[in-house]
Length: 100
Image 1 (cartoon, helix red, strand yellow):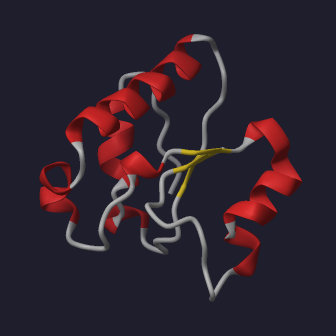
Image 2 (cartoon, rainbow, N blue to C red):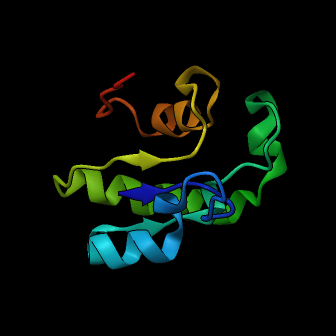
Image 3 (spheres, rainbow, N blue to C red):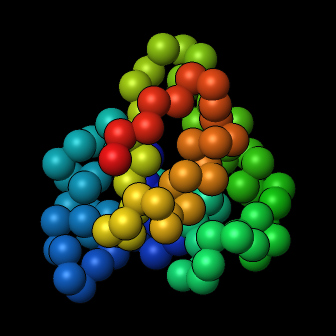
């Protein structure tokens, strides 16, 4: 599970707090905050983050996929079509399977 939230905590969904996820998933959990957005429209997201850190995180994600690891992107956005995960998954294509 790759957590792509800039802030890996939630008051609404306490199960989604980083500490709880690390405890439950161990090394199957990885936080990639560099891929997180600033809670703004996805259209300009790549202009709002540190591009070097984001590209490094994307390379780590792509390496996992190239090694045959299954990857799930975690974010708290309830509408997948409005979430930056769509952009991240697009950058990792063509090995991406989209699940609504």
